[in-house]
Every structure is written in structure tokens, then in C-alpha cells.
Image 1 (cartoon, chains in turn yellow, red):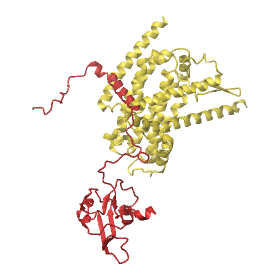
Image 2: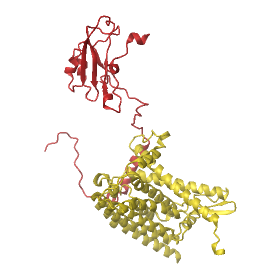
Image 3: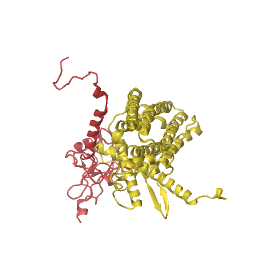
Length: 347
Length: 168
């Protein structure tokens, strides 16, 4: 009967953790839309949304409610199944990535040690890469199923852009992996806890990762798949109601997850300087660590927005030239130098 | 070609240097500029709470005036309707009955006087045309409305309150 004995607390713990992470990423994505509009307004010397609630804080609720009540249109000549599948994939994939991010150290509740990470898989980074590559299917399927030339063009753009930028991103990460020697995100954080942050060792790698993250999340200046002025909104042109909301929401969740990844891999994750000499109880330390990670993520999200409202969109050939002729050679050089130094230090 | 002013600057078409091709310094410079704007004074006027002063020559919503004794000045001569380039004004004249001398200043008055605020271009010609100083343009503008007919302003909307009645 030991085979059938299930650790109910373990399952409960994981369910709670998954719900918490899901709710967290949804709420952050929701308020990113508010933040985006506020940052845009401030940069353009305006006030931004301030009518719904204090400082416009209820604006995301109003927007979401509006999207729910809008008419849902599925074009006659579209492929109905794929048309619905597209935004579903985009949303699902966006939510899946957050599973392997260590949101904090361990909490001790009633004698049980609870890790604030949904799944500490030993291939964490590979998992993220796999899931991110599926993400482009959401855009491609949605654009193709719409049976619209603009959407199709946008999905072709998205596919080639994401494939082009996944290469330098992967190469930048390989350099990081050579340094840390592990694929587990938790271990990467633990290493940074007792050492300098990885950004000190990998400044160029971080820069490449940052730029490619912009391309992977379809954010300006690489938001060509949803270029408003040439493709009428791109792959989500034919979408309305909450399906459009899913696409827009997925972008913000992706931004949140990318920020979390950058904070985890290059900026110490939940570790902060002087963490172990603080002398507070481990549980409090874990919560402080989570807050530190959250602040880092918010800074990155602000950076994403700041760039969006500063830099104009690249032309498509410029984007491709930058990807293949600048980013990949840079990433290769970074990998080569890192490898040489790692080898040199071993001997 | 001879330049009209000495302010024109020739366009620099020399190829980009390596530093310029890196984009990054230029982007950083631009981001510095946008960051500075976050802390600048905002140009927004939060309208219903804050209102900006109109200029003294502002031509707003029309007002039908009364004389010192509170009698309507308008005699329905129709000159404002003739002067109106948008044909926004219509009126119907009526004769003053005995006993109505305290309401209307002269023997003829406007029984119906309507201005379509959707047609009106607020040029102020009606104000200029009026020989009796009966129509004026105030410093407010027509508020929004859900229906077209809500924009056709009749006498109750246009007449200013009787000064004698409001003082009581």
C-alpha cells in the first residue's frame, strides 16, 4: 500500500503555490497595463489615467470588464478551431514559464519546509527555452487562422524574428551556464547569494540577453509583429473581446517573466547584498528575499516601458541585420571569451 | 537657390561612424531625455476640476438678454437669423397682448426662439446684427448631450434669469 500513499500536504502546498504564482503574474500583468500608460504619460508630460479610482488604480479592472463585455467576432473565413487555439496557447505558455522561477528561499511552516519554487527542475533554463519557443506558435497560429493578409504577414514576421533572436539569447545563456555549471535556476541564485551577481561576470551576456528579451516579448523597439502603422495591429488584427485581451495580456505576462528571469539569472534573484549577515529569522529572510526579487522585477518592467516610449521601431531589415550580423557574433565572442577564462582558471 | 533666411542648416549625409553604428550611446542619450521628462511639470489641465481662463473675446453659448426691468429685449425681427451663416436660428414672432407689458419690452416678441447648437459656428454675427442688444454670447460652451434634439436650445435655455425675480 505504500505505493498508493500520497503526500496530501505536498499536493496542497503545490496547488497553493501554483495558484499564488498564477495570481501574482496575472495581477502584475494587469497593473503593468496601468503602469505602461502611466509611464507613457509621464514621459510625454501628461498625467495618465486618473479617473477610475485613486490615481486611476481601478483602470485595469475597467479595461478588463470592457473586454469581457465586447462582442466576440470570429471571421467567417477563419479557421475556427485554430482561431481560438492561438490566444489560448499564447496565454498558457506565458503562464507556464513562471513555474521554474525561484520566487524565494524556503519557508518553514509548522515543521514543514516549503520551497517558494513550484518546480525545481534541474533543466530549468532549458524548460524556459522550450516553453518560449512554443509561445511563437500562439502568434503564428492566430495570425494564420485569421485569414487576413496583415495577420499572416505579422505572424511570418514574428516567427522569423523570434527564431533569429532566440539564437543570440541561447548563446548568451550558454556563456552563463559555463560560468555557473548548472541549469537549475535555484542553484544559480544560491551561487549568486555567496558571490557577486552574475552581471558582474557577464555584462555583455546580460546586455545581449536584455536586447533579445525585448525581441522575444515583441516589445518596442522590436514590436514589428504588431506594428500598428503598417500592419493594423498585426497578428491580433481580427481578434476582439477577451481573445484580444489574452494576446495583450500574454505580452505583459511575458514581460513580467522575462524581467523575473533577468533578475534571477543576472541580478541575484531573491538574494540581496548583506542578506546572510542580517541576523533575522529564516522565514522573515525569505519574505525579504521575495520582496527584493519583486523590486528587481519592477525595475526591469519599468525599464521595458521606458525603452518602449523612447526608442522608435526598427525597420524589418535593420532588425534582421542587428540579429544576425551583430547579436550572434557578439554572443559567440562572449561565449568564446568566457569559455577561455573558465578553462584558464581551472588550470 | 538662394536661401530665404540664414537659419537653414545643411544636412549631414556623411556615413555613420562606428560609435554611431553601435546605437547604444544614442539610445542612452535619448533615454536620459525621456527620463528627465518624467519629472517635468505636466501640461495637462484636469478639466472638470481645473478650468482654464477663456480669452476676453471668447464667443460661447448664446444668452437672450432682458432690460433693466426684466423685460425681454428681443422683438423677433429676424436679423440674427438672416445674419447667421450656418442658418442655426429660427424664431416665431407674436404680438404682445395688453397686460403683458411687464414681460416684453416692445409690441412684438419672439414666442419661439431656437438655436441649433450643432449648426452654430459661434461666429458672433447674431450678436453684431441685433439692433436691440437682445442676444449676447457668454463665456461658457454648450455641454454634451445624448440626443440631437438636446442641442436645440429654446427660449427656456437661452433667456437669462429675470434680474428682478432673482433679487427677491
